[in-house]
Every structure is written in C-alpha cells, then in structure tokens.
Length: 314
Image (cartoon, rainbow, N blue to C red; front, side, top):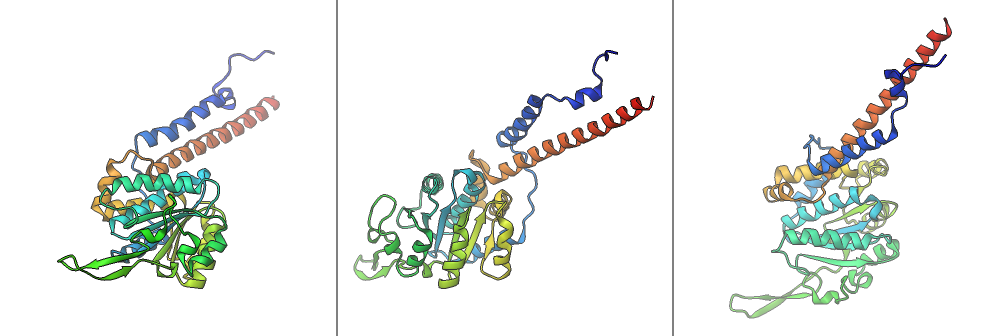
C-alpha cells in the first residue's frame, strides 16, 4: 500500500544535509562578525603564564618562537600576538624567530607587522626584532646557548645583528652628550627571561628538553588544543612556567589582558582582527549545532524503531 504524505518523523529522518551545512556556516560566521562575548574562565596554567610575564621588569629580554604553520594559525596566532602585545605593553624587549618550516616565517612576519603597528612608539632593533627562519631546530637551540649571533648572524632583512642596539654596543651618554661607556646587548639565550613557543609538533618540546633543561631558561608554551594534555607533565615538574592550551588558553590570556591592562583593553575592544575570544564564540556555536543535530538524529532513529515495532505487531 502506498504511503501518504511524509510525516514529521520522516522529515527528521531525511534532513537535507545542505540545511546542516547552512547551520554550521551560520554558527561560525555570525559570532565572528558579531561577537557574543561568552564568558571565559581562566585555568591555572594560563594564569601562571600571565603572572610570570607580569613579574618581569622593563628592559628584560623575552623570546617568541613561531613553531607552527597555517593549519593551526587560528589557534596559535592569537596567543603569539597576545604574548607580544603584553610584552611590548610592559616595555620588554621581544626577540622573534621561526623554527617551523611550513609557513612559520610568514606567520611571524604577519603577526609582527600587525602588533608593531599597534605600538608606533616602539622601535625595530631597539624594542623588538625579527631574526627570521632557521632550519634544524635542535641544532639552533644548542647554538643559542653559546651565541645567538652564531645561529642568527643577521635579522630577517639580512642586517648584521651588531647593528642593532638589542645585540650590539649602545653608547651611554651623559646629559652633555659625552660618551661615558657602552651598554652591551644580549648575547646568549641564557640571558633571556622566558621563551614563549607557540607550537605544533615537536619543536615546543625541544625548547623544554634542550633550552630549559640545559640552559635553565624558563619556557612558556602555547600548543594546539589536541597537544595540550601532554604538557601537563612538564607543568607538574616545573619545566614550564605556564601554558596557553589551544584557542581556549589564548582566549583566557586575552581576557586577562583586557581585565588588567587598560591600554590593551582599549586595543582589543577596538580591533577588527580575529581574536581567540571571537573564536571561542564560534567554537561554542558550532559545538551546540553539532550536539543539536546528534540529538535530533538519535531521537528520530529511536522513534522510527518504535514505529516499526508497532507496525510489525499488527
């Protein structure tokens, strides 16, 4: 016997997949364009990372390594840029490099250009510098313990490091202009107060097991969410000063900056750039959509089985 018009249950069992794609697209794009501002609670590893940077003094050197590629940029970009903003806001001196071969240098250049434009009072070579990409992460890290210039003899533009006050000898002058001595720049990564590695893959581990273990330089890591669990052992052993776990960790760091640093709060409030906080809104939205359709599918399936059992018993 031919069936009549489809019932509501039949429609649930045959939801057009284009409708699902539409909901997924809306759940991602709407929160990016119109941020929802969903609350983000702070975890202990992110708080520890923030507190450690806050404890540093103006003029201290910090190191930022771009150890990821474009595939994880939505997670890693906001944490690297948040770290850079925090350091420049505190008048720390930021040294940037890239050790990831697949796009790490391009991401470093883009992030540095964005953040440097937000701090027009900071000077390249005095307050921050980009050393570029170097192949062979393990060998590079070992060399950094002896002499940074041996691993990176020039900056990303090919200029000798000794030309920059961050690495060369800066004249110390009296009020009348007479030179009374020279202030030497940084030479070894042992003098760096912390290394922040925004990482995917193994390069983040190298900073811990080589630079921290051999030279004692503190390390903070910003891994992707899928990699974050393995770093809790390093946190427990004290080999990490803190961690920004995935986009959630980056959003936590942004919220700490917004809450505690008025200059950056204004910046994050005015910027049109993608931030981890917006990303968490989108991530929450898409998770809700997926959960909703899973529930609909399961309920429809069980109702279908009940209908079949009922019709079979007639």
